[in-house]
Length: 266
Length: 310
Ligand SMILES: Cc1cc2nc3c(=O)[nH]c(=O)nc-3n(C[C@H](O)[C@H](O)[C@H](O)COP(=O)(O)OP(=O)(O)OC[C@H]3O[C@@H](n4cnc5c(N)ncnc54)[C@H](O)[C@@H]3O)c2cc1C
Ligand SMILES: Cc1cc2nc3c(=O)[nH]c(=O)nc-3n(C[C@H](O)[C@H](O)[C@H](O)COP(=O)(O)O)c2cc1C
Image 1 (tube, each protein chain N blue to C red):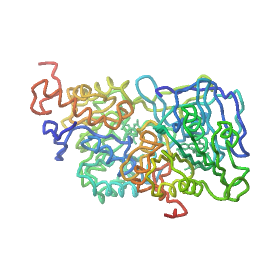
Image 2 (image 1 turned 135 degrees about the vertical axis):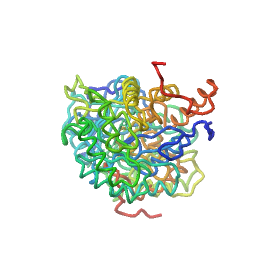
Image 3 (image 1 turned 90 degrees about the vertical axis):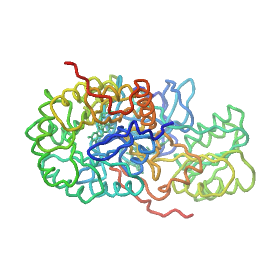
Image 4 (image 1 turned 30 degrees about the horizontal axis):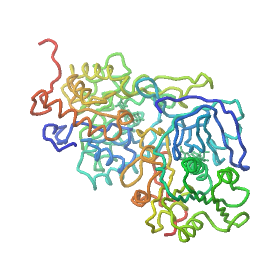
């Protein structure tokens, strides 16, 4: 955590046409929900959740969106990347029966979580949501864990038709769980955070990050000013509900409020 | 627990601070809520990020990198711009009585004057002129605080129109801090703030063969700069009568006492947040109280600038 290092990319896995996993064979001391700051020391430096970590090494899974993440797609095995971290508060691993729901690139950190829960002998149901079957990620890896995977796609091209939030609501209505863990786009998270439930719930959220060590204030959220890079990125449902900006706006690189285009339904 | 101990109550330019600990410019401070978080954590006075006339997204990353005993950073003066910034100050003022310093940055006197006009219409208690950012030299050349003549000119232009006391934030990266301190005082500054980040420095990644920071160079902060900060506050306070905000590498109550003994009136803590958490203000308040008790001091005022001739 005190050091920045540069590591060789040892393996690249193409998950979909727009998602790749970058594997490094040096171990780092990371827990599910934590993230690293990744850089080529050329284009920029951006936060990415750790998608697996054990004594052999770790990985991050990147979706090509803008300049930095698309630039990542040019990297080859053997290239070096700069890494700071791991940072942030990890998921609080509960015992009993666990429900996980991920959408898009919310799935990678949850895969790491599911693997750790499974190692601890916990029973896990994993709702894996994507736009369509082509964008579905980690389907095989999750199956290999030997857990119950429920696939949801917006267009029904794979699994059930619907989004991860709907899948979660149905599953919560059908059975009891001891804890729920969620990651994905803010619209999905907002719907889930608004669900009235007594079940313990944690959500992984994203805000614009720069220093990632809690001093620059970039990811401080309203109204309390707590920092997503230190006090988050994982928050429990009660804490999320207190964030007045959640689902409403987030700050850009200059610190201006940027309102989400679609107001999220209650 | 930090109790509202009157021993730490400090007068700063006519404002009463619960404690002499300050949140410096650019650390948190991007929004009302991040300023509030510092107050909740025990800071007695807070500073906004340095505001510019236009919004700035800052440099691309990496903007910061850990080095032995601190960090190098080149955020690139990211800020939402003065108009948005003063709204955040109002929002803060709805929720807190703690004094706010509005930090502003421009490249010439006219820019500072325009910014001051905005600040005059805001609820800020003080205005701080960032004359010393070392991280935008590629855009703007050497910081203004390299020249006593310019420092005096800018400070005078601002004090002429400012409705609130003016603080000059100086650079440590000068041959003689006394000349700059005197120039700011002569220009009409009510207080000085030093030090801004040191250097700047540079780090190269040997595997990638490139500078770590996107800006190539970055100012140093954290415990590694403290001896220089103490020296510069000591020197500046030997020549000016106005109060000094002393900062640079402060981590503990002992460091804060040392800064007071160097001649500071109040003490800033920035990078220390990384090492000891946001709670660092509460911790240092407690450590200051313990020091006062051990020394049988009734008030923090009893810690004086050292006198080595006596
Ligand atoms: C804690 C955390 C974990 C993340 N984990 C993953 C992950 O596992 N996989 C993945 O693909 N993406 C992840 N992201 C998102 C990833 O950081 C962005 O996709 C990436 O920064 C986009 O940069 P860009 O230059 O490619 O795109 P841009 O066009 O610059 O931005 C695209 C989107 O990414 C956001 N973004 C840009 N820069 C940052 C930044 N510095 N910090 C946060 N958000 C930013 C923008 O607000 C915008 O919504 C995570 C973000 C956070 C905060
Ligand atoms: C991430 C970061 C951003 C900073 N931004 C500003 C700024 O915008 N304006 C300014 O006057 N000083 C800025 N500074 C300098 C600090 O206010 C302070 O003077 C310096 O860091 C030394 O104190 P410290 O060692 O306690 O951090 C910044 C420092 C850091 C680490």
